[in-house]
Image (tube, rainbow, N blue to C red; front, side):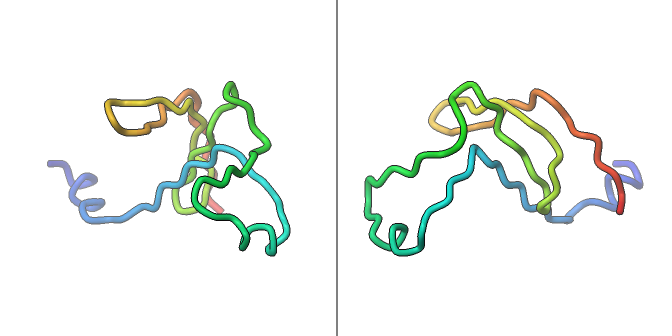
Length: 82
C-alpha cells in the first residue's frame, strides 16, 4: 500500500445521489403516508447528480445491480479547491 493510500485509510466521505427535486408546503408533506408519490422535476432520461460531502463530483445513470440500486458514472465534474 502506498503512502497516499495509507493516508486516506479510514477517512469517511458522505455520498449523496440526487435524482430530482420537488417543492411542497410542509402541511402537504406531513399528510403523506406509506405509498405516497412525490413527483420530481426530472425524467427517466435525466442523469442523477452525485455529491461527496455536499460537493457535486459526478453525474450518472441510475441502474439496478442485482437487488440493489446503483449509479453508473457518466461524467466526472471538475472539482476546484476553495
